[in-house]
Image (cartoon, rainbow, N blue to C red; front, top):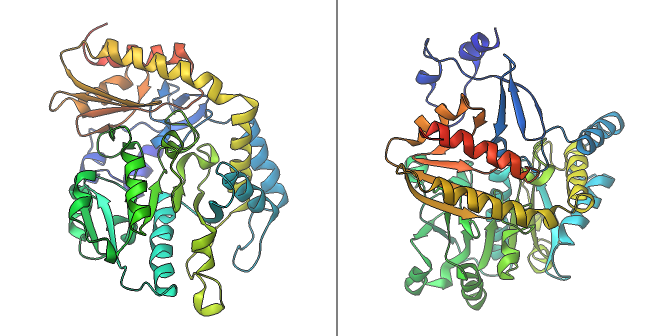
Length: 409
C-alpha cells in the first residue's frame, strides 16, 4: 500500500521519477532501524552502508538521543529564535565553539541543513565586506566538482556540472579552480571568500585532496585577506578520524559549515560557525543586522539531539575506538581491490569510494541489497560511509555483501 501511495504522490530527490514510478520497479520502503541496521516493510534486514545519506553517527535509534528528543518534545517542542532564545541552543553553541581555541570561532548561527549552513556563510561573508568598507570584494572561489548544497547561492558554488550548469549564471559570481595551483592566476582584491570541502570531496566520487593542501589554502587566503569557508557538512563529527577534518592540518577557517551528523543523524539541524571579528561587522543597529533565517532555526528538539550526540562522543570514547575501525576498513578495501572490476580505492578515515569499471556502479549497489547491504553509488563509484558505531564484524559483513555483488566470495 505504501509503495502505491508513494508512486502516486511522492517526488524523490536525485531520482529519475519515470524509472521510480515504472510498473516493474519495486522500491524498498524502510520501516524501522536499530544500530547500523535497517529493516524494510517485508522484514528484510540491511546494513546501512552510507549512514542514511551520510548523516548517522552513533547508530539508529540510539537510546540516549531518543530519550533527549522525547524529553525535549514534552518540555518545549519549538519556540521562535527570532528575538528569543532557549537554553539548549546556548549550551550547544558553547559546546561547538569549545572544539576550537579561544578567540577564533566564537559565534554560531543555526539553520536547517547543509545548504543553508553554506548559504548563511556566503551571505555573511558578502555582507560583512559591504559593512566594513570592502564592497569591491564580491566574487567567490570554489573548486571544480565541489558540492555545497542546492539552494541558489550554494548551488552557484557547486562545480558538478550535471547538477548545476543550468543555474550557473543565477547566483553569486564564482571562479572555479581545478587545483590549488590555479591560485597564482587569481586577482585576490575582488574575492570575498574561497569555499572547499576539506580533505575530501564527497559528490566528486569521494576524492581526497593532497596532504597539506588545506594548510596551503589557509595560508594563501589569510595572506590575501580572503575568508576561508569550510564545508564540513559531510566530513564533520568524526568521519575523517577527528571531530572535524580541518583539525588534521591545524586549520581554523573564517566560517565552518556543519549539518548532517550534528544531531547524530536524527532530525534536521545545521550550524555556521564564524569569528568574533566577522560577527563584529554586523553590530551597529538594525541596518547592519543579518536578515536571514528560518522558522525552525535552533529548533529545541534538534538542539537536544545534538547535545546528546556530542555527549556520546565522550561517554563512548568514540575516537579511541575509531582508529582500529579505520584500519580495518583499509584492510577490507585492500582485499576488495584485488577484484578486476575495481579500478581504484579512495579512503579518508571512515569514508571510502570504490571506483568500479564503467557501468557497474548502480548495478553493484542494487545487487548488494539481496545480500543485506544498502549504500549508494556516485556514477561508477560505490560509497562506503557507515556509522562510526559500526563494529569490525559488521564491516566484514558489508564487504562480504559487496564481494558477492561483484561475483566472487
